[in-house]
Every structure is written in structure tokens, then in C-alpha cells.
Image (cartoon, rainbow, N blue to C red):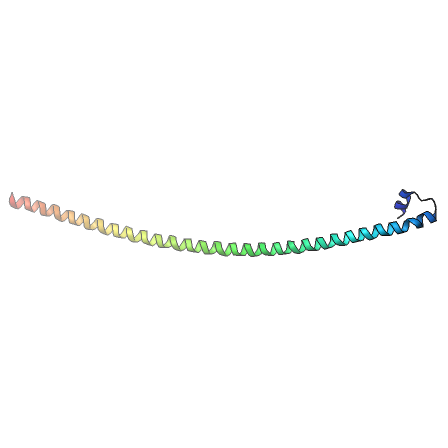
Length: 117
């Protein structure tokens, strides 16, 4: 107040008193603006809390989805590995049958040549 009065340069108490209504009005406007700023800050804080809550929920859903996807992928990989192992076993079995059949054909062919020879 003293610095404001000093800047305004009043010369006596009467002049100072005449400035009080203007000063009071200015203080009321400042108080109103400060109150509005506080309300805005509270609103922003509330929004910030809601955003944080949504982020936590989204993070949790992302973790659940990731875990589900990883489990599905592991299941598919496991199934594919089982199928691959089954196919390898079948391939060995078929290769063995082909070798046996070829052996019989060769043996049969030799017998035909020796018996007709």
C-alpha cells in the first residue's frame, strides 16, 4: 500500500483517503481474478487426475492384452512344433517304407534276372 501510494504521489492524508475506493476496487478485481485462477487450477487438477486414472486403466488393459497375445502365440507355436514333429516322424516312416520297397524291387529284379538268365 505504501509503495502504491508513493508511486501515485499523494501529498496529504485527504488525497490518500480519496484513492482508497479505487484501491479497494482494484483489490476486489484482483481477488476475483485470483479466485477464478484457483477454480481453473482445481479443474485442471481434476482433469489431470482423470487422465492419470485412464492411463493406469489403459496400461493395465495393454498388459492383459499383451499377456493374452503372448499366450496365444505360444499355443500356436507349440501346436506348429507338434505338427512339425509329427510330419518329420511320418517322413522318416515313409522314407523307410520307400527304402524297403526299393530293396524288395531290386531283390525281385535280381531274382528275375538270375532265374531267367
